[in-house]
Each structure stands twice: as C-alpha cells, then as structure tokens.
Length: 119
Image 1: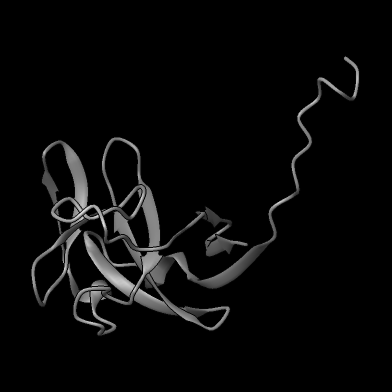
Image 2: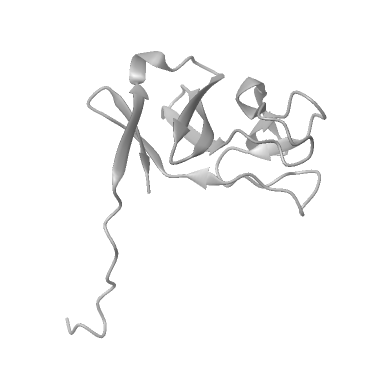
C-alpha cells in the first residue's frame, strides 16, 4: 500500500479521570477534564457502555446534565436534562427536541479499572 492510500491517524491521548468503581449504573458522575465538567454515564447491558458528555446544559446554562435521567426515546439511548427535560443522545450529544442544541461528546473507555477520556 502506498502512503497516498494509507489513512494516517493521530494517536489519541487517554487521560484517567476516575476509577471504574466510581461509576454508578444508569446514573451520571461528573469529573473535571481539561477545564470542563464532563458527565460520565455508565449503562450496563449486553455490552457495557460508558458515555462522556458535556455537563453544561445549553438550554438552561447550568451544569446539571450529570443529574439527568437515562432512558430510551425514539430508539435512542438518551439523558434527559433535569431542568427543561430536553433529551440528549448519549452517543453523539444531539438534542432530540431541538436540532440547534447539542452537547460535546468525548471518547471514553475503561482501561484496567480506570475510566479514561480521550483527547
């Protein structure tokens, strides 16, 4: 394969933010990462998932997303903002009720008992 056909990717740096044991099933935990509050959501199931989204609610302006309720809406795994009840997709951060609103999403993984956020 020539270099012109190769896909070159920048390696992702992973930063540990908490222990896996700090996560609460079907609930949010907020951590500080690179100057931002990040809400971590642990969703156990057939495939255990951890999602990392901005804790800052773009509608109310408050840092409350980590206190939201997790559920399923229109086939999407979502978190409902505790203030105005907008639903944000855990996978990509988009708001189901208002396409103009979205939450930032970070890559996240569990590695040897530590939750790590990619940058």
